[in-house]
Image (cartoon, rainbow, N blue to C red; front, side):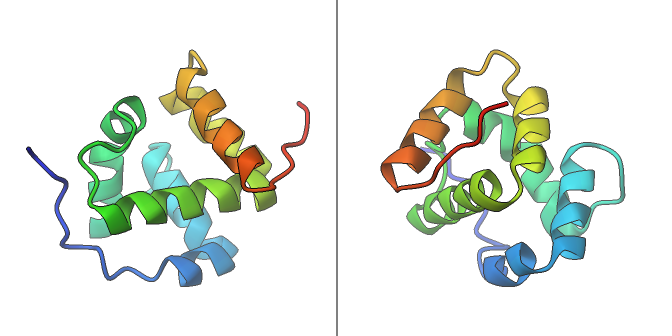
Length: 112
């Protein structure tokens, strides 16, 4: 089965999540509002597919990283989370699944 490239698997997620400027640069890339780094371009190319197929083509570490990012956004950057889900999951099918998983991990999701 096809998997996503592992070329960028050594990217430092903690550094990105801890640095709002870096995080916003990635968000602007996937929201088509700004320039994309090579890593951002790769992310943007696969984001819709990964969301819709539940990260089936993700390697294990990519899936773990995806959930780490999702949980960080829900917990600390809810506006970014809502903006991304509005674009990439307009029906809300996957948002509920990911938010339920976050709740199970003890993350409180603010009401809209």
